[in-house]
Structure formats: C-alpha cells, structure tokens
Image (cartoon, rainbow, N blue to C red; front, side, top):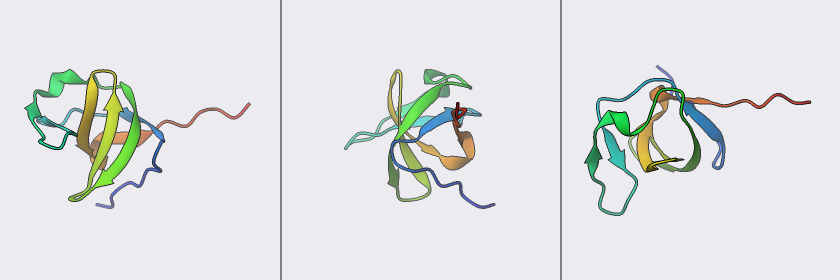
Length: 77
C-alpha cells in the first residue's frame, strides 16, 4: 500500500478511526479513538517518522497515519 502525501497546511478529513490516537505533543499520550469523528476535518501540521502526520483537529493535535485521512479538495469557483 502506498502512503498518501499531504502538503503542510492542507485540510484533511478523517475517513476512519484508528484503534487509538496519540497526541502530537513532546510527550505523546494515548487517547481513545472517539476523540475525533469520522468526517471531521483538520489541518496538517507536519510529517512525523513512521508514516504519521501531525494533524490539528477541533479537540487537539494528534499523530495519525495517512490511511485514516483524505485530503479535502475545495471546489474551484
């Protein structure tokens, strides 16, 4: 499976919930997956080792793998 690439600052949407979430803090903590909702949108902050992306959602910044994300494409009008 190929990893998806997202530009920093891109808007992304959660398309599935991972088994758990890891906070994007200097000392990461595990959180239950229901902290974010499927369909919730966030902003890509950075790329992390191990195929993780730092994404800012409404309830915090989390490390999430690209398989759980899709880029939000805004219609060009």
